[in-house]
Length: 512
Ligand SMILES: Cc1cc2nc3c(=O)[nH]c(=O)nc-3n(C[C@H](O)[C@H](O)[C@H](O)COP(=O)(O)OP(=O)(O)OC[C@H]3O[C@@H](n4cnc5c(N)ncnc54)[C@H](O)[C@@H]3O)c2cc1C
Image 1 (cartoon, helix red, strand yellow):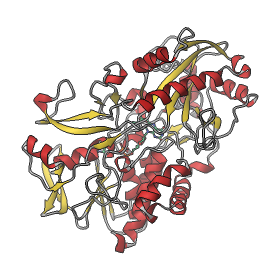
Image 2 (cartoon, rainbow, N blue to C red):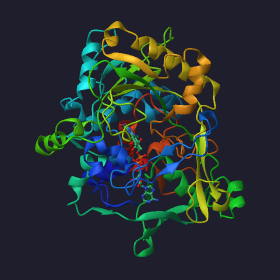
Image 3 (tube, rainbow, N blue to C red):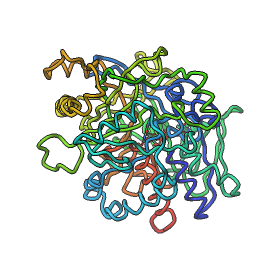
Image 4 (tube, rainbow, N blue to C red):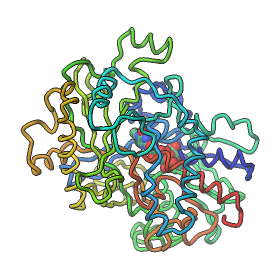
């Protein structure tokens, strides 16, 4: 996704010629266009289909980690929620990384992304009957009700990357229309296998195409935008990583960079699910009438992004009550059943997410024979261990967020719509019971970040404040992997904002 923003800005500003390389093919599947069908794209040709190692704090489950594999990256398969981060998320970035991340610069870049994508002027998309009903009830409750395009406290419908009932990925929004520019070349089905170096200067990449292996020379430099799973992998495959690990794998070292793959983290979600007193949930198998309606005017349940609304909350008695601690994703479905259950059901889910988790994991390469059930491709296999909930404070924060959410849902206005609680279930009251349910059912909400962290020290970070890889020349990493810490929001808008900032720095060549 970041690659689309960057290629678009470089082309628009005429900063040079760009070759965009994408491992996947063209985004042709209907699952990428019809909003309610995106979960069907999580397996299949448009996703890399990764999974974590067994997670001890999640009942030893391996958590599926879909990643988009097509033009637009994960923005081609994601939930389309468009939301800038909270201003306070950048306090630490500013103090640790300096003026490059001063609040006014971040603000200016977010505004530019808002304008460029046109998202902030969009009228709100249609809501499913169940979500509409809930919003009505919320309008009468203490939870404020307004459109959510930033992590403001309260509940409301999300702004979505959609136009006329269809998904708008970063490719659709930012790059597709620039294809006529002679300075832009896009190649699909071209997987980068390694970065090539002359001493410690990146000079190009080696790619695998349907026709075989090829070397491509880069005139000015290489920018990795392969995302939080694949950017660290490419660095490790290219000899940038921890010297001892590389020796163990029998690989030659280009640059000692022990932080590559470290600091991987993510947002988890746990759904509180209620029966509904009235209405029917979104059904993954639309009726003939619904299909015709969508074909005719692109409206109706098929245009739903499922996570249609959300909320942001500070913990009760929190020191800074304007900064949210946890988020809801509200779906007019039983979260764990959609899209697998096809007969009509009557449930609604409030997915609870702690916004600033402290647990940190790691992406590494292992020899395939040591991979122990992770996906095996070639002599080395990726080992993805987000180390979910390893910090006790995260476990406590999660239980607390679920408990406080339950209290909010007990509001009498909401109770006119919400029937019996299905999950965690009315019998599960104490902390221990909730913690056990979290371990069994919490899962990723797909916000993997941080594995090529931005920072000032070569030992503890991978890129500097301007996305330049420490210790080598001519190489940047600019995508979700560069976030030093996750933002209190859905991250795609923040990743676009980061790519926009890099385009600014590339423009003022002195800083490149
Ligand atoms: C299922 C899902 C739902 C989500 N929902 C939301 C949401 O609603 N709102 C939100 O804000 N965020 C959401 N996110 C997160 C958001 O989509 C990501 O944070 C964002 O897309 C990250 O951008 P990126 O550029 O870092 O990586 P990506 O968007 O993943 O792009 C990486 C690209 O690099 C390509 N690539 C990787 N390796 C290679 C290689 N070796 N050679 C060539 N190409 C390669 C990939 O195929 C892909 O196209 C969701 C993510 C997922 C997976």
